[in-house]
Length: 370
Image (cartoon, rainbow, N blue to C red; front, side, top):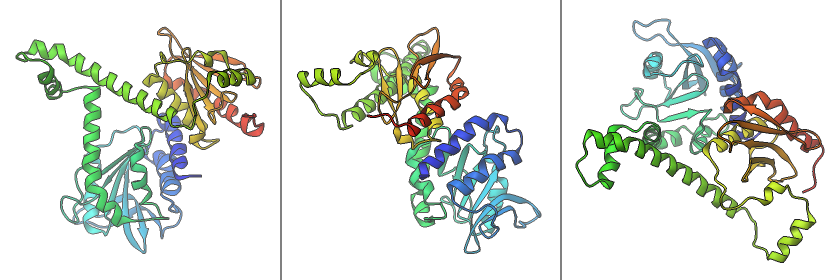
């Protein structure tokens, strides 16, 4: 299994089981030990590689323990402190990490609840752990640009120097990206004022701020939608399709059965963020059976199709999200007859995980001709 596939599989497990986890120990067993073993590649049952409940007496704080210490050549390299999966991470949770960081050879400290992993080092002062992480990995909102950096900490290609050298840039780029994301969700006064001053010539009173606050938020959402749509158009435009003449197009249509709805696709189609989020959920479920890059999507006027190998004869699911009153998930039986299931929210898709996986397996077991 590829590194990215392992991350996707663990993310699916976290998504499906997180709300059922009630204790810190259960979080360790269900999520964090698999992260150490499957993702980082260390043997959690080998004390020469992973030491649970690691103890190093520190001043008056004797007997305190860090949940895990990852060892290489008999030296501590990574310290990991764990919290319950339902707990939000705060710097106050890292008190043991601060103390242990100063008395061991570790250059990397990790604070995690099984879903979010905050990686720290000592950029601000030697042998003193920074108060802000240089890398934040959220398995349920994975930033793919961080995957190569995470891979450098795996047992197979451990490259601490490269990680430390890149840490400062990662730290500030990550903080800026999270700040921008927060402003798109809930813009602060300074953010609103910044844009208002550039489009509004009069004095900015409180009434004007109140008027522009929803406008700035709306513009941000529309901008993100347009960026997503542009990326989709670029991806479709570079996927290897070549232009054909009208005669060739007619012959192609008559020589292979194509779903009637697919013929209705045109430039009026608008792919929404909600459809893309639904697609990512289906993709995460299906990647337990195939590599994620084999799960493709095509948007149409009346539905959003999710396909295996971008083949419209291998439908996995359809998202019927165009109605404002009710959303549906379309699933297919062995004869490719579609049944619609009502959704109260995107999380309801997980209730149909078995059917989604079964559809993928059916194409693998009985390949459909392209």
